[in-house]
Image (cartoon, rainbow, N blue to C red):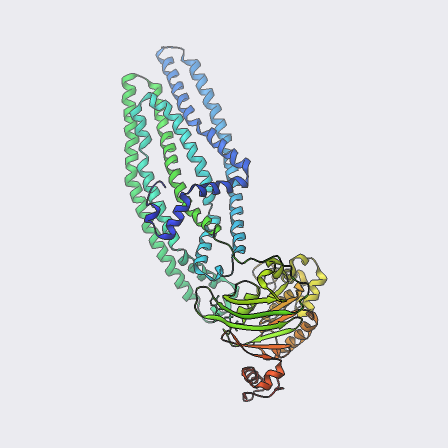
Length: 626
Ligand SMILES: Nc1ncnc2c1ncn2[C@@H]1O[C@H](COP(=O)(O)OP(=O)(O)OP(=O)(O)O)[C@@H](O)[C@H]1O
């Protein structure tokens, strides 16, 4: 670190970043990323820059030589003409070379910057896919992700490479010019070299303050993005419009942005004020150096050296400012990219599997044995000693009130979380013994909040088995099973129609039609375990009956788990499990549970009465109409 606080004086997470960026391993890691990107471009950028860096020193010496030649010629003290011709020719050659090298350097820089931005954005995406679900339910993770995403496109990482190269180049320039300057006038040279120091220190100080402000506001920044998103997305448009919420969200957004603006303006004002005041030291320093050089030339008559000196002053202040500014910039950018590497080095999903291959067909089924689960960061048990058996090849339905724990069962089965205690067995073997990719490959799940991919209908279904994305007969077959084929058939481009409204030529489906497409995706998977979490909530009752008729055929061999609130769906299941407060309270067939007259019978009768517009009758007997 060049300026500012030590890591120990900073807040904990900020200190962590400062510590990270101060460690040699961070720099090796960073340079490793550049190097892997393109070794020859990185080498060429460095070499071009460092070769160009000696040019100002040569220019100063040649200018002095040319002016000395002119003076000699004018005073008739020697053969100045040859000296002038040589110096001018060399200066012309140098200028042309610098021009060409500069163009090459800019081209390489631009390409490297683009490549680095692409590479880092991809690294952030890859990392995002390797995290576990718990991370995505944690605000701290989103803050880190937000900072990393901002960094991935900010160009700060490339700036670091450029600053490393430029800092070394400025050093080369300074050394090459200083050789001449110190031999001509040491005090003027020293004054020239140190005068840019104070302004650079002020710059670095405020650079760090800016970074700290942005770092601390990650959560607020996300809120502002959220307000922007909610007022401009198709997903929320109708509700925002009809409830008249637009002005409310815009006011919240403005409030946040105004508070950012006030802080940023204050910081900019202070930075500019102090920069201007302290920058005067630099101005007086350079003027002092010029004065010294002029008086020295008057007394010694070395007019060529004076000319060289005057030219050198600008070159030296540029190089010194470049060197110190480069170091300060490196520090600041390292803090910023610290956010990026902080995210990229987060611990990834700890859920791992064994090496047991998944059976092509289940023989016994799935068993939850005394499973308890507490979501990270909470105390309440989402599942509390839950036990049940889902027999192989059967369709099992889970019913229960909101928040009873139904979706949690699915998340544990997909190993998105690990049970806090208890075991899940598949065909008698603990689930964690199975190869994780193999397990997920053999489960077809459609969640309650399924995805609507703004892509073609073919892709929306084909994503159920990505390796069969080109298998149109399989895709159309899955669409027929889910009943999505009718809606897709009436789209202008059939299966190749872009769905949704976000991109050009997109055609919108109804919520129920989207749900049928999502169901087709599940059928496309042809997995031995099929899990449908609220699969038909938006589908009309007639279509639902049809789909479930086909589900029994389509997934005849599959072990199916069905979560539903609509009891007309549930009654087709071979086995129904009732869950309350994370515990199994009843299980059996529809007829058995109705006969028992418990929770299921009461809920079923409530719904049936709703359909018939009659009075609910608790504990209604089996066969109550649905
Ligand atoms: N990510 C989470 N973090 C903390 N608690 C959670 C999380 N997800 C669910 N819960 C809690 O766990 C309990 C069970 O939730 P779950 O989603 O399994 O219920 P559900 O039966 O599927 O409900 P619904 O019928 O409304 O979908 C609830 O009390 C819920 O508040």
